[in-house]
Length: 297
Image (cartoon, rainbow, N blue to C red; front, top):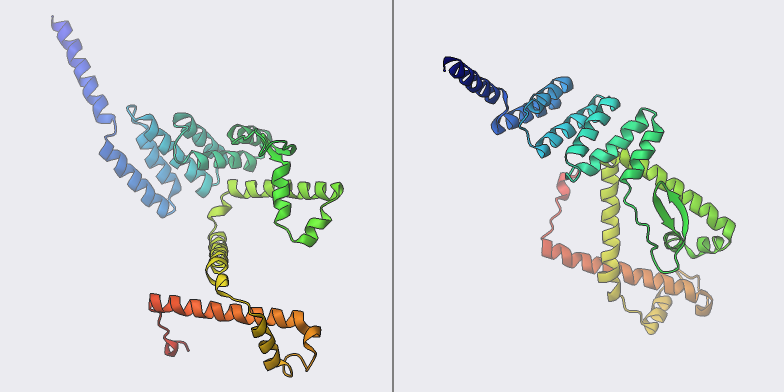
């Protein structure tokens, strides 16, 4: 009886100690917060040690364990440039929670880690596993003209890119040899783009600024095309009056028929500038725009 009591007591003590050693949810948040502060102060190894304390909890849920492995992998990858350890922790994170919100970044960085280590075959193997394969043609009768890993590039995709070019350049790509050269260049650009994305160049601040500027210009062009240009009305009599008022100053008294094309282009440009200015003025009134010229030195 006494022996059984001792055994039971030891089991209770062991259970109590195990509970004491495990990390509570509150401790997890504290460790994560401390790890973040350590990273902010460039104490990367200390931050990793703090995360590892969380991993010491055997009762940790898979999703939480996966997230901590991902955060450690990120430290090794971005801050310490230790790509071997980064790859190991990214693999653990992916295995524990393959559908996590950060899985795309983890997968991308895993491939980049292998590339950084010079293990190109492993990088290719990982990339092939991660590629979102769309094996079906884009349209009926479509044919595959190239393949990047497991990703097919279809003829319709190439033709769509060619249609974005000017008519003069499109004419140059009628012949097979020129089109093949275009395809090779297109694939080369795709390879460089994928490599840049994997190495997180998309997070570069200078790149972000250029992308924002480009996006702004595209949106403005689209808005002007749909909201402003339709307000430009062309009147044939107005074109002639336009020419008459500028005949000597802009056209050196040349006959109308000889400068008709130039006159029309000038007239159209002026009408568009006027329409743009008027529309801009209406927007400024709605937004209550003010300029403080005296503050500009």
